[in-house]
Length: 149
Image 1 (cartoon, rainbow, N blue to C red):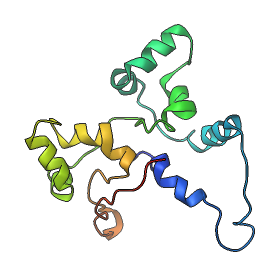
Image 2: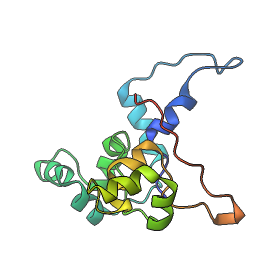
Image 3: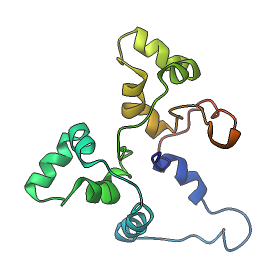
Image 4: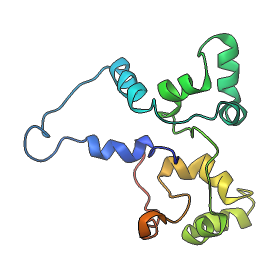
């Protein structure tokens, strides 16, 4: 199961625009946002071992009692921090070809692999990890930088 889209991709869809009731602004507390995300992300499979290896600060937090599990951390904090729930499947050749800046970064030694870039930056930037192939869909659109929030 691919990870859900990064929160940066969802934020523009939350902007109030168009006819009512979409123009209505809604104010939610962070607790309410977390409760909504907890329910929405409940079906996301979090690979506990991978998540704790990838994010040692979470492992340390669990040891201190800040969270009960990697899954709980992901649902309450990790998703909003653009962390991945599990080891992503990356088509290395396609990713480098579709993202020339990544290929350049690898040649310059900024990243060892396309997968490293995707985990560190690409996911939060909304880049696709591989070409879309299910149901005969076209390849994912090339990356277009968006403003950071």
